[in-house]
Amino acid sequence: MTADLSAAVSAAQAGDEDAFRLLYRSLQPGLLRYLTALVGADAEDVASETWLQISRDLPGFTGGEFRAWTVTIARNRAMDHLRRLRRRPSLSVPVQALVDLASDADTAERASETIGTETALALIATLPPREAEAVLLRAVIGLDAGSAGRVLGRRAGAVRTAAHRGLRRLAVLLEAQRPAESSVGVEGVPPPRTGNGSTVRAPRAEPADG
Amino acid sequence: MNPFRRADQADTERLLDSAHDARLDQGRPTSTVPTAEPVAALLAAAAAPARPGELAGEEAALTAFRAARADPTPVVPRRPRRRRVTTGAVAWIGALAATATAGAAVAAVTRDRPDPVPPTPSRTSPEPHQGVPGSEEPGRSVAPGTLSPGAPSPVTATPPAIPPASQVHGLCRAWRAKKPDQREKALRTPAFQRLVTAAGGPAEVEAYCQRLVPEAKPTESAKGKTSESAKAKPSASAKVPPSPPRPGHSAAG
Image (cartoon, rainbow over all chains, first blue to last red; front, side):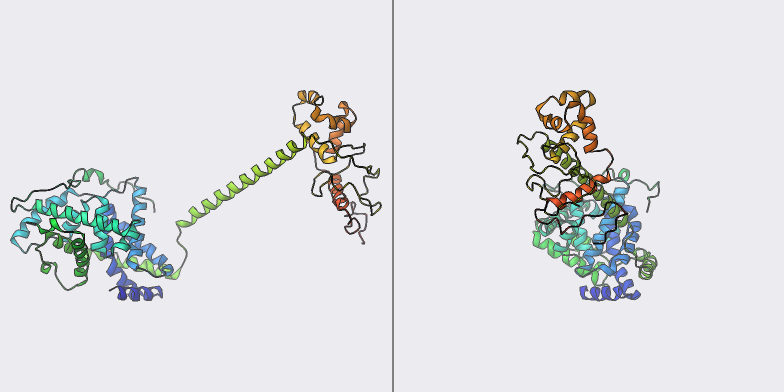
């Protein structure tokens, strides 16, 4: 996959539109999901800005992990966006996700125990920001711990630890959602932030410049 | 029971890796991912293949790609920031240079003023012909130790300048820097005695200084400087032809 990607990168740098299309299709879903965790409903706008910059800066890409390069751009755009909104880069927590999860789980019990992508992402977004970012970069974008650490400006070990904690927290969360056995022995894991998601999510009243 | 609660970090790493690998297997629906572990199922769902809505911006991205190919200008938003930084740096350097120069001037004045060393009397009396620089005997040597070639002090003084001109020069500037009501008193202090002596009396100081260091930069100063630097070189007075002071003189050298 990575080999395919780098071939496509070279072709796109040479001006091949199909190669660029392939890059977009390969990377955009992960970027959008990651951005949704960072900026919520504005993710599509930020993703557009991200692709704008990718298009511009593509000739200057000199090798390395292309995925990490694009996701770094996306993250910078997201941080700029949040700064514009004068908001702290807190992850959005749609309360609706938990409600969805409950119904999801109900159907899941009867059906083949699947949960939807939307719900899964919303659940990950309830994690503390560091853990959520680590899980998303590792599992959804597909970076290894080292690359994810470079994107986040942290050590690979710190990324591993954060992702590990995040997954444990998710496990507890999933367990609590299931009305199954008497297994609510949540040991030591602080509850995720659930409240005030709707208030944090400011509506885009005024258009951001840009 | 959730087995994941006892998972160690290696398990997590495996799980995270497999989530993305499963996604790459585009044909496989997420339901076939083993759901024994709910976390694995959740990760698989989070990394599921693209949904149609997620690729809605494809044409827009391609338009941007084409535009960037057609007009490969550098990224615009970075420009003004860099320029602002540059302007700031230039301003800082300018301010620094101004401060440094002012400091040097102050240092020059303060160095001249409280000079306890008695001036070495220059044995050569100044020439009476001030206006014609360097026109006299080529071998004329003027006390090389007392005048540095780079000193910006033209010797245009007519009176017998006992102290070196540069020192009187500095004394004049220091004296002028004082408030008018303190000038007279200052001339009674030992620090300005040399100036008084050079001027020929306290009453003459003002006129003397005006002559020596006029407010406007005179042409005399430039002329004197050339001749001075020529003179200050111990043995090279003939090599440096003085610049003609007046355009009427033809410098056919």
